[in-house]
Every structure is written in C-alpha cells, then in structure tokens.
Length: 340
Image 1 (cartoon, rainbow, N blue to C red):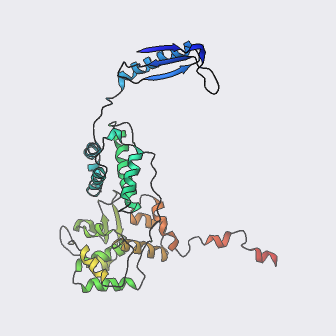
Image 2: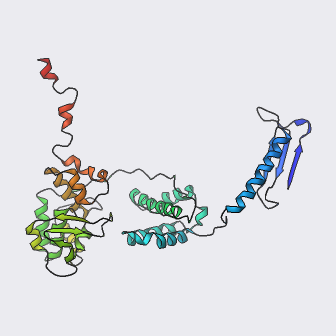
Image 3: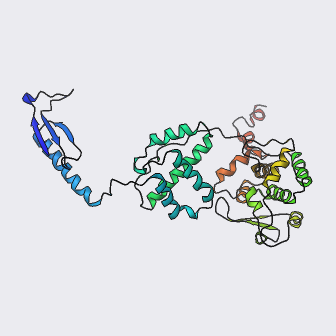
C-alpha cells in the first residue's frame, strides 16, 4: 500500500519550511510497518519509497527469524553446553545465573532491555550487597558476549549497563601476635587437618579450598603445586622442610573437610575477621606480611596466582619502602641544603 497526497495549497508547515507532500506507506504490505512522512517534493517521496522497498527486499535474504522465542533460561543452558562446562567455577556460577533468571521471571531473551535489568538490579539490592549484584551482572554479561562470539545471538542487551560503584571492604589480616593464638586454638581443637590446612594457607597464600583439597601427587620436593585454581593456571610454591614434615604421608586426598572446625576455632578467639573473610583472612595475612618483610611484589603476584599485577597492588602499601622515593625526589628535596 502506498499513497502520496499533496496537501491543499501546501499549508503543512514546520518551523523552517513548507512540506506539501504527505506519504502514507507500508512497504511490507497491509500488516507491515507503516510510514507516514511529509516531503518538500514529489521526487523525495518517491525516492523514500524506493529506498524502503529495496531495504525490505534485501533484509529478507539474510535476516534471522524475528520471532526468536528462546527465553533467558534457554540461552543459559545453551551457553553452559557450548562454553560454561569448561570453566573452573561453573558449579558456583551456573546456580547463580539460574537464580537471576528466576528472579527476572525468565523473560524472552530478545525482549530483554537495559531497563528490565536495572529494575531487577534495584529490587535485588534490597536483600544483597552491591558486590553480589555486580557479580550477577558480570556472569550474565559474559554469557551474552560468548554467545555473540559463537554466532548464536546478535545482541547483548546489557552491554552498556555499567556496574554499580561500591566501597571496597576493609582487607583483614592477622597481626603477628594473633597468628600463634589462632594456631594454638586449632591445635587444641583436636582437628589436626584444620591446623595443617591453616598453616599451609599462611605459608603459601593459598585459598582455603586449594589447601584443603590437596592430594599426595601435588606435593613433591618441598613444593606444593596448586591445580584447578580460580585463575585456571597451575602454580608451584615452595614450603619449608618443617611444614612438609607435618603434611600427612598418604595417597590420595590428604585432608577431610575441616572448614567448619576452622570457623569454630576462630570464633573461640578474640579475632574478628571482616565480613566475608573468615578463611580468606589467611591469604591476606600471607600477602600482607610478605610485603612487610621486604618481599617482591612480582614474586607475590606469581605466588598468589593473580592474572594481573593490578590485583596484587592492593598489598603494595604494606612494604616499608613503598613510595619512599616521594621523600627523595619531591621538588623540595635538598632545598634546605641549597639555601645554606
């Protein structure tokens, strides 16, 4: 359907010009999109008609089915089958992604908008922290981007939604006098596994799960090799002969699940780790004291298994020499001597 009508005496006006030709046009037929526009000349109106007809004809050759009725849960399952299963943290990540899907009432993926996401995020903030909401967004954003790379979808609807700003929590670590207090409490708890796992974490900067899941094959020649790490890369860290002698000499898994015993032991002390850092305080303690004692920031990066030096720099200020050159090289340095 197309109709070009000249308005009587050309009386249709905008602020700057007279537009005498009115176009009423559906390039895809009666049920298609309708265009109602006004033009200065008849030729402009006809050129617009030809442009739209050509555009619609060309689109039909390659445009995917606009009625893609896959829901967000379908995309999550597809992503998991094609990519997610290979991730080290998939057992933790997938349930969180499905919880997001449920919280959004499993919308049609093609209809998901930035506004939908921000409304869900605002509601979620009523019960969880900003960091948790940002983590959810990171997971869903990564899923869309990966499916785009795999040519399964064309658009990431939340690609331009920025993560929320939040204040970094206090980084807790044990003071020198608190370390023997904790170890003595663990030793007295009669759970030797918790005691040794804690010593391994304090000696190597390991995460609790990395130390607790060690097997006999990961320990050799006074070195521990951590595998299946958060960053996906193996790393080997030397340990003292004394610590190596305390580690059980048996095949297979070396320790039972003992995180509960650790939490009970720390609760019996006066140590109060920041929220969410009950076991991670051991990793922070290793890194903090490593820098206080003159350790090299690059060695610390490799020991902790950080992918980027930016992750390690949060411990740099513990070094006694950190930013010492400020005193030596600031513009007033040596001025007193020059004025004498």
